[in-house]
Image (cartoon, rainbow, N blue to C red):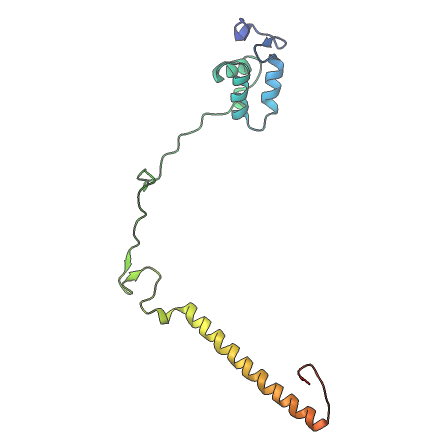
Length: 154
């Protein structure tokens, strides 16, 4: 870093050890997508702290509104008890079912099982209808004397 104070530095002065001029530092800062990260990178390049780079930028025309603001420290949620080794809370019992929430008392009354049973009945009915239609087709073929077809095995 040059021995000059920030207020004495001109835009063409080189900030050691980065070899960047003050103008290049300002341009790099203004073109950055993430200015907070760029401030830290510029501080690392110049072997200075972030406050020095901020002062350099503010002294040489960067407006305070262009500077990243300090982030608020997030408060943990109310129910946060710290530690990752804690067991999750046990769900409350539903007094109607005497089992954890969402599980019916009688598993045979489960709506999903009812839907599956209905689909199985429908499949069986369709298979029965297909067998009946196949038999009817064979009867018609024999009556008409037509041989062959997609369902014939001979």
